[in-house]
Image 1 (cartoon, rainbow, N blue to C red):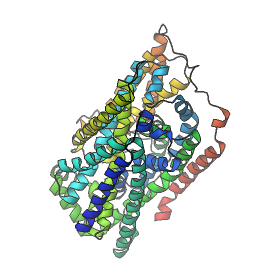
Image 2: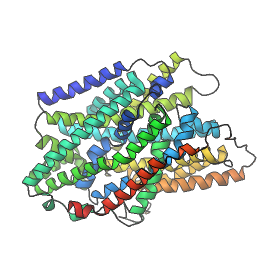
Image 3: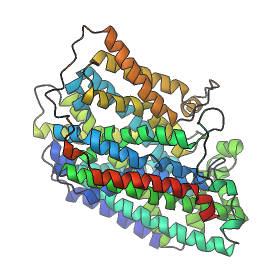
Image 4: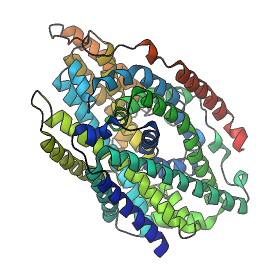
Length: 548
C-alpha cells in the first residue's frame, strides 16, 4: 500500500466516526436501538444483507469455492432455503413480534413463558453471537496482519475500536446507514476483484484450464451423514430453512432491524428484497472464488506468495494443512490490483468487519439492557437507560474482541466455524418463539428444559465444536442438520416435560396479538419467492454446463 491507499482508508475511518456523531441525538430506547421506528425498507435491506454477507463472505466464501479441499460452487446450496424462510418469517413470525412493541424480542418470550425463559434465551443469544462475531473479527485481523504486516493484536484493535466508537455514538440509525454504505462498498469491491481476476485468468489460459471440474458441481444428493458427506440438497434445504427462519426472524441481530421498520409493509418489502437479492450476490461471490482460485492454479508465483504468507504468519497451520485458503483474496488484492484500488478493497475489507461488529454490539447491548436492567414494573429513566446502553456497547465490543483470540488455531474455514456455532442454537430458539405464538400446552419449565437439552445435545454432536476442543466422538453429522435436530429435540422435550409438570400454570396467549389475519397472507410475495426458489434450483443444476 502507498500514500493513496492509506489516504482512502483514513478518509473512510474519519467518515464513519463523523457519521456516529451525526446520529448522536438519541433520547430513549426506541431512538437508540430501533432508530425511532422510522427506517425504510431500502437501508434496512442493505443492512440486513451486509450483516450476513460481510466478512465471512468477502474473504472465506471465495476461498471455499476456489481453494478449500472439498469446496466449490456447492456453496450456492446455502441459498436454496432463503426464499422459503422469508415466506415463513413474513407470515408467522413478524406480525406478532412487530405488534408487540418490544425492543428485545426475548421480552415477548417472557410474556408467554416466564422471566427465566427470557433469560435463558437471552444468554444463549449473547454467548453464540459474541463467539461468532469473535470469529468475524479474527478473519479481518488475519487479513490486515498479512496485508499490512501489523501485529495480530493491533489489527483486532484497529477495526474494533473504530466500530465501537461510531456504534456507541449513533445507535441503530448509525448502524443501519453504516451497513447500507458498507454493503455498497463491499459489492463494488467484489466487482473490482471479479473484473481483474477474469482478465488475468484469460491471460493465463482461461477458466477451463484453471480449475477442477468437480468444483462446478452444486447439487449433491447425499444426506449429510457420515465422513465426507456434506452440502447435500436435502440437508441444505431442510436444515437451511430452520437456520434462516431462526436467524432472520428470532435472532436479535436481524430481528432488531425488522422492528426498526416503519410498518409491517416495510418489513415485507425488505424480506422480499433479501429473498431475491441474496442468491445473485452469493453467485458473484462464488464466481469470483472460482476465477481467482483458477488463477492460483495457473500462476505459480501467486500460489507461492499465498504459501509464503501462510508460512510466515501461520507456521502451525502451514505445517498441518499447507496454504491457508482465507489468504487467497487479500494476496490477490496486494499482488494484482493497482494502487488506489488496493485502498478501496482495504476499505471493502474494513466494511466487511464493521458491518458485522456494529450490528452485533448494538443488538447485544439492546438485549443486555432490556433483559437484565429494564425488566419488571420499575423502568429505567431515559438518562440512566442511555448511560447503561452506551456502556453495554463498549462492554460487548470488548467481549467480541477477546473472543476473537479463541479461534486463531482452528483448521476449519472461518465461514464454517461461524455457521456451525450458530446451528447449535438456532433450532431451540426458533421453537421457543413458535410455541410462544401458538402453543397452549407448553409451560415455562418444559420450554426451558427443551432449550437447554437441545443445545447440550447439539454441542455434543457438533463436529466443528469437537474440533475446537480437540475431541472426536467418531460421529459425523453435517452441521447444518443441527438446526433441524435442535427443532425436533426442543419441541419433544418441551411437550414431554410440560406433560409431567401439569401443575405449573401455562400463561394464556389470548391477550397477545398473535393471530394471523387474512391480509397477512401476502399472495403476491409468496408467489414470487416460491417461483424464485424453483428457479434457483433449476439454475444450480445447470451450473456445470453454464460455467463449463
